[in-house]
Image (tube, rainbow, N blue to C red; front, side, top):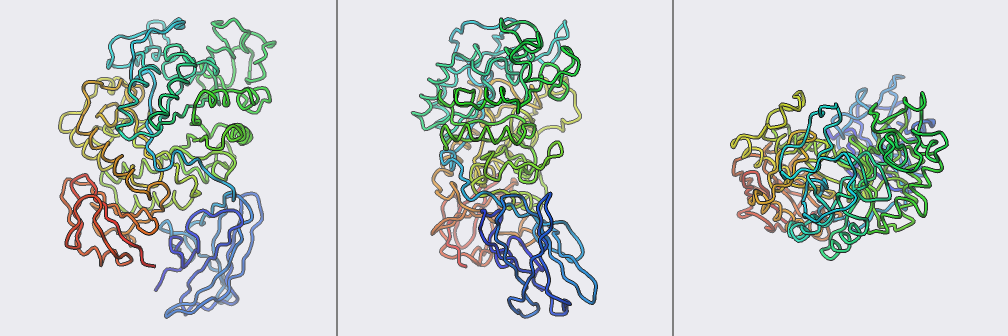
Length: 628
């Protein structure tokens, strides 16, 4: 018996995944011939806050063991829709809902999701098919160039590679006031290295003046931190990067400022009157005071990070206006912004932010920090509209990261496939093409530690501080990292390398995942591997926007050790095989296994006698033509 309904099969849903506004989608279900509905089945479809719509389904075909019932829906409303099917037999109503990610069952399961995005939604081309590189500016490269006007209260370290401070000092002050001195000039000196690595875009963690080394507590949005260099030196970095074909994205922290800032000025560092100092400050209305001035709303209760009222007209104009923060830094050469804690930014502010960025240049990008499925995310009781066409272009792809790490560590292939396909099904295609795909970031432990090291979630910072992988752990983590990066580089979206991952840099959680890049002590073999990944990726035109589906799975994979998926294109599809184990895996009978393809050709790795051989922790790629 064929499935009742399958969202991955175009014979059931005529368009895979999200659809454009005003596209017509045909939905079909298959009911066994012994099911005789009292009247035609219905498709029940609704949006949050709106009444249900009932679409009558008509018998559209007869097959050997079933009748096919179909309905068409013109997707007029840009929104996230939910749906299920229903029929009545013998006076009893039955429901057809989702089970196993994409299949359906009778009287069991959950609602299906249909994302409808605006018909004019496009995302910038410059990132598609490229490779991103994330830099924590203080820890990547120190030029040694002197910098002027360094603010008081900083510990300037001269032990590049030392363990970051992680304990309060004798006064009980925060431990992130130590700086290793990475700067714009240092980054500029390594543009040749990044170009050779295959990098086409750099994402910088915050660069604005701030008084902690992470710089998420902004002190002055209009000024680069003096330890990094001047605004003009940032512009020069962008200009030089452009010569290498590299663009630069900035981190925008707009949900809060620092208490030690021009705007709040809790400690009186700045000459201008801050909100903490006087209600007469022009910044007073930016903040929410509960008991002035000592009690105020702050980010996660951290009083050094007072929350701003993003929809305050003056604040919005300051950030999003024609002479505002966004357009100022775009004018200096930034290619766009990654938005810190995007789920804490109100819809109206995100709408205004997009208008500002896109009115400056529609090819500038906006990437949001969202840790969950961003298509159906709810935050603070609000259903978010990130990916419908008037807010974000892309998000940080944490769901892919978790799926990759869990699979490479031995998790079921089926779980991996379902996790990836869920995102591909829920997100608009323009978003998928520019997804930020990573295995490490500044907020999580480095992948090599997660893959090869000990469990750290329940460990104190003292345990993490000087915790290094043993040689065996390092080799194991490195091998699994290779497999993870192969998946990261070839799945849809844009691979993002967290600085130092390619060099074997270790680190558990913050601040140990923010150690200095190990110049002179790099793992050259790992760098060569990542460089080759970039070269192979660049040589495949389908990596820019080719769709993906998994070719070894029919509810389960043929061999759990191997994941195989396509990157579609005309006239050739590329089929990627990734091996998560230390075995040399040979998969024979490829024309039979991949019966929907013809004209097989080798592309990368060993393919002969109709068999693919996938090296340990490596990948093999073949070309073929899809036969409908």
